[in-house]
Length: 265
Image (tube, one colour):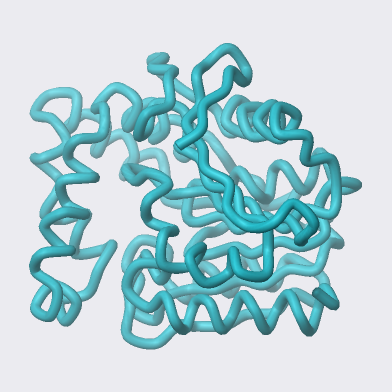
């Protein structure tokens, strides 16, 4: 583990891979921490320099305001990159809300981004009603009140049957997330519509989605991919919202193909 101060919070992050290698940043989803990338980074760090970090209020990182914004979460990333002296030629891999952060960063800092991987995400996720309902339940009863439902979106029934140990531990990851930080991130998701911004992106982009994703279904992810000129789109078989956990081998294959073919890496 590594720690730094960025945008007035303590940030927990990890870096793996040789300094000389190309840089990839992994941005995790709501209710998870940097450990969701372990299998993917174990492979990719052989050839690339990989940075993972806990978003504001998640994992070991600080910051528990009542509400976040995508701009705030994007500034956290920007300051973290400054702290580790990553200035350009960066590949961003963003999952769910991490994908919104990646889109927003690429829009505001196009000179720093070499490639964009949008994983199980969209330019606009959900609506006011659904986010307000989730926030109200969690504020009243805590994340465990919605944990079972969220897990059915994260991971398929087959994964639960085959890997009950992993399924239980990922549920612990979710339910042990700070309720205040979780709700603060929900506000950022609720209030973000990056459609017009994302439509202006020109960076090489790959959109990936689990074929059984119930949180950001394939059709929604495809609609976002269609906003971006020449973006590639790919479904990952037999998984839900978290391909990096459920199908790491297929996820690695997709990322390696994109980097080597589109980014000449």
